[in-house]
Length: 104
Image (tube, rainbow, N blue to C red; front, side, top):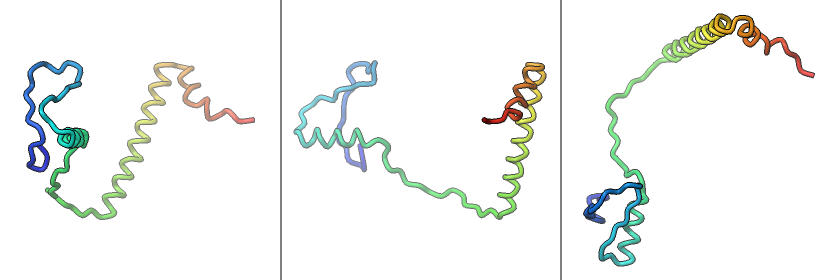
């Protein structure tokens, strides 16, 4: 059914194990073509209604950026500390070794 029009009213007679199905019936070529288009169309348009709308000021964006920066610092510190504790010297080397290498 699409836009309140019934394109096919199939009856399922057996289980569909592999996800493939065949619709049989007394269709003309035009009807079969139209049905194939409807089945391939994918998601159907649905009405959108606005439930809530808010206006936010620049201070909320600034606060979000600050929280993001803080979460990065806390996360990076936690990873460095974990590596240093779990892997001992190798963890420290992995933490800070890449910063001391020079190219060419």
